Length: 427
Image (cartoon, rainbow, N blue to C red; front, side):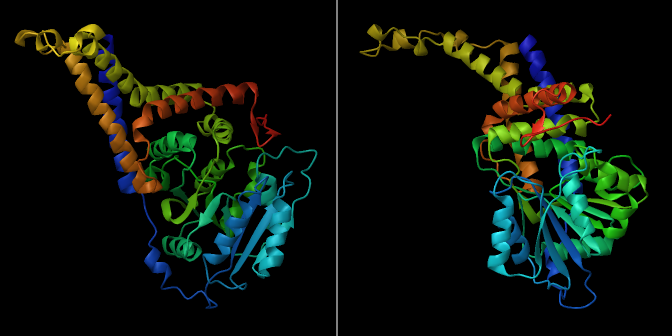
């Protein structure tokens, strides 16, 4: 009876979660790639765009990121500058970027070696690097992207046209999601789905609501709006600076636009389990306003959505196997085959499950099938396939663990780092 009760809760949670995700996917605004082809980038009317890439220990990414930006557009140096700022990396990020600049000899590409952070002020994450870079840019629009992002052809022109047409002050998007290692496939699609559920596109884009969200990998500001809210300097101590900047945009009465951006860019956020664990435990709890209740709630949702249905299915299947002599034969009686010893059940006992067990079995199957539907729905935004969907039980368990660990690490400081740099909460 306990198992049946848990599975009933799983069905309720899964049905509500699927409904919310479907609504979010349906309401997600998308840019039109075809409209970008109608633009004339060489004309004087096109505004100048400054693309800023803060990079700390991004030796694996920085070359491909810079090349993708430059190859994504035909904009000339009069309309585009690409600034890569090295945030005092301890690897070869700066050397790789400088070598690329010499190799390409593209006047649009600029490399900046970041300065030491002020000793009398705490600057978290990439905020100092972004603030430094803005000071030397001249663009009317500021596009901040992470080094693990790859822009798609026409992305800059499409984004600018969207901002101008819709009169948006901050355009941010959820890029297409790339997964390669096993840990990414288990966790990332579930995380992206959860973000889409928690930050419904309609609510975020509604200026009358307090709901605000921005995706750090792609943030396009009007320079006037960026300066009005104080830029990255105003969020210097914020670990989750992207969401805080979005909140400030809405508080200032400016227009925030959250879009599905699979046609603009794709991102591979983490390349290993250790990087994934460090990254999500860094951000998740702070993104939920340091709410223990929200983290426990998220963990419970993940457990009811994913592992509990699988556990229920395995328990029932084990009971079925134990009730059928076919699967428990003594090897000495298995040959020659004797139907009377293999299947001694009479017609009245052919169905070995009680009503409760049969109902539990059916509920488990239904909720597991909804796991596939969730991955399919999420793919409409993330452009990430349903590969390994049947391992959702393991993935949901990992996401639940990340939620609780994020709260513990943030509040205690135990192992709370990002790429070797210790983090701290602003006082």
